[in-house]
Length: 321
Image (tube, rainbow, N blue to C red):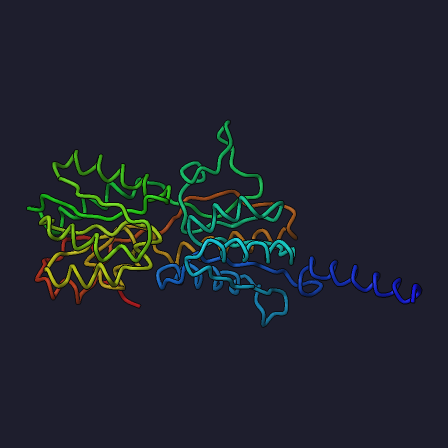
């Protein structure tokens, strides 16, 4: 019986080692992490994958395996997904959204993390005391500069607007930072902001209805996970009351907002995917630099504009799938 234990132990060790390696020799493995299920974030995921395929990295070319995980808004599932990625020793973790990025950096060990649909690292609380970014982080970020144009955009559509209503995720750094910038910009333009916090998407309906009852002129859809996951609730309530919705996210225009100025999510993911391809081109020896998102658009939803009877300002293009 004692002799039987030696091969069994060796077999167990081999199995454990195997669980900590990539799928196949010569095949790069990416762990792609979504914090929530959302069609807007899905655009970035599509762009990321398309960019890799354009650069020759795909399952069909037998050199790439992407392990997709979606936490469905559950933090425990998010942590378990990251544990799975680190156990498998994936070559790269692709983090889609602020929460995914923060969690990935905190739990990735030495595995490189490619960020997208997230703010600058310092805005997400990811820099050290000297302002340095995490050594294993690269990808594409957004600044808050778009906020100024996004708020001004509302006056381009509706010059007589006086009050803006919004809900914000009090647990998300990006949402809090954006809120402060919106308040500052609105104040400079003589606009009043009514902002109410939400802790999760189940509260969105009640809070949005409270804003409508305050008599807001327009609703501004914040760029955070709660809005992404419960936008249709906001849309239904605002449409019922004839209140236009504006945003900084093109994906929300596709889902019914009147207009937006901000990063194109597909292009955002595509830009990040190109950086991931650069990383693989270097045979994982060199992390690309972190980049600011490049493509921002002014777009509108023709159906929403027609329903509300709005005139289209110059410089806006109709959204098309």
